[in-house]
Image (cartoon, rainbow, N blue to C red; front, side, top):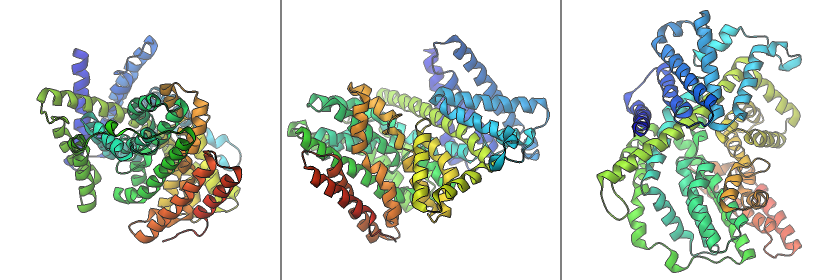
Length: 590
């Protein structure tokens, strides 16, 4: 009981602080960002029950050291501001080392070793890169200035990325947690079942739609597989669907949640900060490509259904209209408030999300049967607080560690050097540079989460793509999509591994089918480069619609080519050629 009360109080403080920031006005960055880290540290180092005594004790020590360091920065805000990122005295050197070690270990515990290893290599380059021969060396940066910029100024741990985590990502994570804690998740599933269940392979198409709905608020492929997959995978297997096919459907559909508005994943909010554009601009640009992704998945499912002879759900297996009408308000009300305030008012996205959270919190008191219960509402409220706090901690672990890497890139000029290499290797050709960027995103995404892969890749490859003529928003969306490749692409395909384990299917077979079902992930980014009007529905709605239909037909042809369903080889070859021509010939520009 004391543990539960302690975690509940910490969760309330975590959620309460981030909501207070939305309505409190301007707070100095070197106050809000250290407090953010202070609230995150216990979730990573203390709240997780470690079996290993060494990890348990080091967790307590790092948590205490991190808390003390953050408190030092808050208390000494004005003197530190006058130092301009230069460390003074052994105490501040010790603080820098403790903060860097804490952030690296926090990332390792939250998401394994790959990202902190990249960050360590970046730190080593910053401190020792002056000894490297050739163009990749740098003139050398004094240790006090290098470490100080990363730890007591806004150039690394407390940089722009951490600001995104504090001010934007956390608020939308809280909204997703509150919608999911109530009947919103059941409402998503009921709506998806009603819309898609009666079609061929209805249970698989329900998985596609429900994952699109749920993923738009979770922003995590793994969380999406674990949540919607717990319902859809047993349903598909019970209806006789092959286990590998069922797992592939869930993995592909769940991976699309991070590109599906209105919430998308943490990377979308980072994109807002990097591009300095309104969040509504990102949403508007992302919506048609996201629809094409799920359309390609839908087409693939339908082709596999022909091969396997999979039928739709019986009428008595579909939710009745009364159930649908009773559950839909649980997600329509908060999302309606969010979208209405985003598009019809001048309020910030954070403020709109804060109001939507209030509505979602009130709706926790009721269930889909119309019963209102304070006890049940408090139980759901507690679950929402805990879920939101854990997600905030997980995302912050990624973003703050990635901030170290971006800080080093900015301090040393390494990003500019990598950009020049990309341009050189591509011979100044945009499509060659796009291919090199895609390969880099795939390799990096195998070991680090999508948001970190996007941030690192766009920092080094984004300027090269822009220099070769790609508009900034297009370049960022391209990198963001390809940062998702590793969710379904071997050898490291996280969503596939989870879905295969849940379905009891061999992961390699699942990956093979997932890559065919997820062809939109590979082709849609190239398609919107060839047809830029697709991401400009506000500026040129008719051209955007034309691009949508054109690319949609091309993806349908390619699904026929890649998923045979008994077609002769010549038909599949013709469909392959037709799909490529339809998508890439005669590009549609605004």
